[in-house]
Length: 298
Image (cartoon, rainbow, N blue to C red; front, side, top):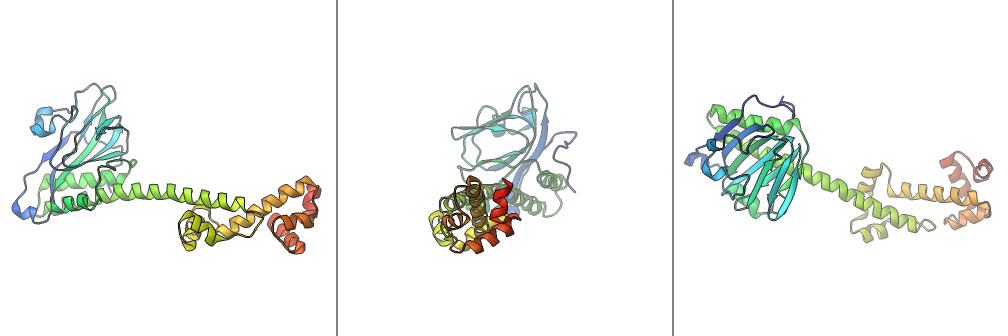
């Protein structure tokens, strides 16, 4: 089991890796991995001379020839790239893509704890070509997760020992990190999209509460299939669109009955029930009281 996401290692871990032609046959290699605790009021990056020259200007601005994933587990800072600025908090992750001018650093008075891994190879460039990596999506509010830290620590441990095929294990970890970050982000976006679809469907049903529900027309206006609407609506609300629509009718019926200036028959017809007796039975089933008894309760 991996360390908890707020754990820190007692000393900084810093590795820049050589790799062979044999390693490159994988189509992917790990080039660097590490983690460091940056205390408040410490120049960033700490131990600047311990990094190759190309990596030292991270706080001022730099461009790298390979890929990196940085994950912050404590503290606060900033990340800037492509003219955009992001506030970095615990659980923030960001991709550094080849050729992308960027800079990042912790708030001087706060510090942070960071994990990073660098990698390159034709398989990763294919992900870039296919749009899996994108300059439009490089910053993610992933959240603090034990398994994210555990993956980084696994890569670090493999690199420390450099046992046979350690590059294969390290790259498997990198792919796991990519999957964790992208899937968590996509699923979060999907939840937001579900909410948009459900709210639109609710609005359309509320506008037609006096008629009969037409799910095909509603799904058509939203731009999805009727089956997909049913699936999303039930996932998000625990009821089908039809069940929700009938609940709307009951609520509207209760509002009309409270006005006391309309007969039960008129309320039934207003809400699209052609049979007032069916309406009365349905109302009692849903509320526990017949329309006439409900009116007396008010």
